[in-house]
Amino acid sequence: MIGPAANTGPPRPVTRSTTDAGTDMSARNKFPVAAANRNPIFGAHSVSVASARTARAPVVPFVASRPDGSPMPFNDADPREAISPRRGRRSSSFTRSVAIMTSPAEASPLTTPTSIGSTTLVIDIGGTGLKASVLDARGVMVTPRVRIPTTYPCPPGDLVAHLGQLVDPLPTFDRVSVGFPGVVRGGVISSAPHFITAHGPGTRIDKQLKAAWNQFDLASALSESLDRPVRIVNDADLQGLDAITGTGIEVAITLGTGLGFSVFDNGHLGPHLELAHHRFRKGQTYDEQVGNHARKKIGKRRWNKRIHRLIKNLQALAFYDHLYIGGGNARHVTCKLGPNVTIIDKNAAILGGLKLWEQSSQ
Image (tube, rainbow, N blue to C red; front, side, top):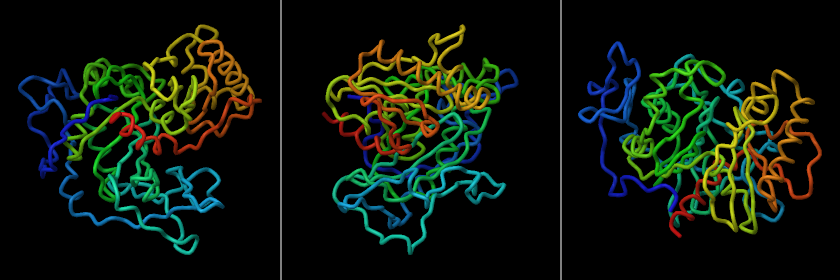
């Protein structure tokens, strides 16, 4: 089983004030850290969306179609989708800052989600953005993806609150899948390299944030906030679940704020390895050499040379049968790729959310 389900009992109403009196917010510790006699989950800005969730009516989805009539997920080729928050309409208020990717009603006929099986909320947590959508039982998005920027500093309680606000406009769901950019075991965070920094990736590490994130039970926190069972894995693992065919050794990487890595053996998810923090070249890690900061600094041509070397290293390391490259920066890859290397849909991390529950039930 991948990541235990939390709070599997019947939904129950959750009420919580916007200020948690049980959170340790002393002068020495400005970020909440779990304590035995205090609320170990929520920060000072925690909110509950359970009451809104139970009252919300389902949203009729837009589903594009392939030539054969099968559903097609939203992707880069669809001009109706606006991923960047800069292209979305946002007010200065955080609660109104969700950039919802809409499509014109006249652009394509609408279809209704299947009523058979469970609906799954999928959350993709990134170093620069938080994304979410809801999948029907077939794994088709029933609503366009929503996105908000990741804000810093980002203690656990604030992230939980922001995710609650992110998913608030979405239709109802039965369960939750989450991709997190770090090491996750049993729903508990073992490492959160982006979120322990004071002002975002590339800035100094904050000791109090590091303590707050250490062994934080994010699955339980989100389960209580959303009032649904939650499963959490690394974000590259979640993406890979959608991309793989289930044959041989398959590797999936994400090119985004940093580098994500996952490996599968005949469809089975292997142990998570933090390749991103290993040395790559000139004494720097993969994160430092192929992450988003490096791409912007050195330019597309030099960055692609590094990607080509990364692919060669992965072949020597894993002897993979197939490599899948995803993430927000996959669209910038222009180096020559072999026949066993595929650039995958940027929404793979969302679409893999259904597979997480399917694998977990096996």
